[in-house]
Length: 285
Image 1 (cartoon, rainbow, N blue to C red):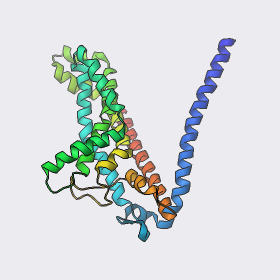
Image 2: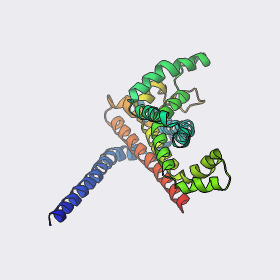
Image 3: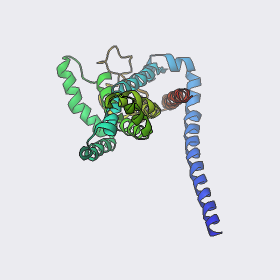
Image 4: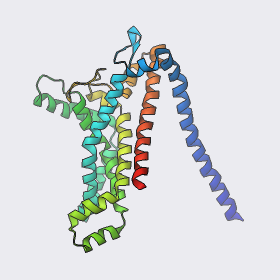
């Protein structure tokens, strides 16, 4: 009798926690769209989304350059971070000596706990001067610097998720491949790693979410110019940095347009996540 009451109480507690989580998401969505959609409709959805002119003092609120900036940085971070993260995960799962595993794993976990502002200082004091020396005449702040920094920031997530996926691969896959005469390296990269592709896709989804949503570190190294970058060394501005840079003094339609940018960012991340979820489902089938 007591056990049944405890189970019912636990069930209600878990249901309450789940309902609270859903309520928080619903409230965030309500705030964003209730405050942002009117501005988007007033400006004009096509003009707001696809115009490249962002000049609040002239009532020009086109955010296409910032949408493109977010996508470019997200892609750059994934291109640089995923291969390195997957290889690190493979090393941890199949090659790392036992004596080195804990220090290496601790270093990865420690990297995940470093505040983004510290990453920003690192990029500002190390990466930017290096690029200034390699390419004289540029500021050093731009697509390449921000992409490298974001790749470093998403690395711990990718390594952890991919390593867990590799550790969960059925050992019989490895044993069967070796029994058929395949070497260790070939088995790892052509049998075990493909078997863990769901984990790799999950890591990519989480990495994109982190990269597209990052703000403080990007502000410090991206250059923050609301233009379409002409090269990897050109400055750019993302949706998140645009909101942070101007929200403190914005008012009226300007402020509502910034909240509208938050709506676009929310939908953008949602679409990217849904796309990868559909890809995962297709791969599973």
